[in-house]
Length: 458
Image (cartoon, rainbow, N blue to C red; front, top):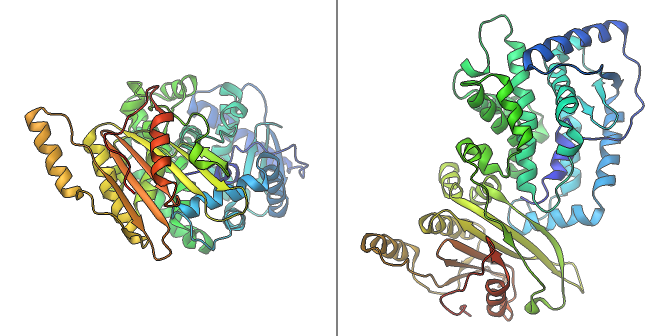
């Protein structure tokens, strides 16, 4: 979900850190690195246009500059806003120290990085070069990407669309993870395209199994978001390499993916199925006294993560697979902190996909302790009516508003209108009907307004 660029800043090796003083590598290390660079260049089919500056850094020095770059790119308020929204969505525990957790995960995982700004590859001084050779091929692949495709452009934070940021990271990391695997298999007559299916799933199991204790104990959302660019990006590269040479991958940089949906379902990328754009429009009168905390696009991958606590992984992924587009806006009262009020409008590929998403949401909210506070049509009844309407060729039935409350009377509402789903999180009861109506009136889905068929439930 929300600004996954924070995680990308920390976990993507192509992070653009400031120019960093490094120790000079030994002549043996430099010679080894040059050899690896030549082999990686031939393997990937990208000519090396210039030598890569190589330095050696301590773990403390690397972490110092990662923290420095984090502070340069994101204010404390932005990081706190991310944490507040993630917690309101149930993706992080309420008491978690978000920044400290992410930095702690990094502290146990970091092993060097390539810096596009200074065009420097910084190696870890605590790991023998023999153990770094595959990872060095990975980082030198990033240097080649930078020379041909401009990584500074591709790794620039997209603060209002974390879904697209994840998709770009999947291209960058999937590319170099695939190159690294082929590098390790040189001389064995196997390449990425002829590897057994499920290689990415095995890689994920290995990452979790060999990861640090903190990584294994981290909230599933942080862990899965960290893995996404490497594993789903690798699956994309494996599919391309099963039919094409590495040169076909270059097309992904000329026309970059728009969403994680295009990473998870590559056919949608190749046939140019772009996300539906949802725009929030002007100020909503019902939110007088509130200020906008942040806006974002969640996308298919992060919506699946949202659903997974309430249903199985397979069901969550299937329910999220009909995603067409979404927009999230978080607001907070101007006179204090408190939980943010969330507005999330999503568009789905079909009315059945929208209904499947709504049904999964019911289980998620129930798992979080929110009980039905209204008695509209049951989802099962609506599903049967939908099937019957399809068979008769009639318009799809419209849904009332489902409202859920917990013991503290904090409320969520879900409204289904054909292929659109409006979810309001933690909106006070007094303003919720007016807020629902104003969102439908002002927000635009694919350039048009959606008019609800029924007045909002109180």
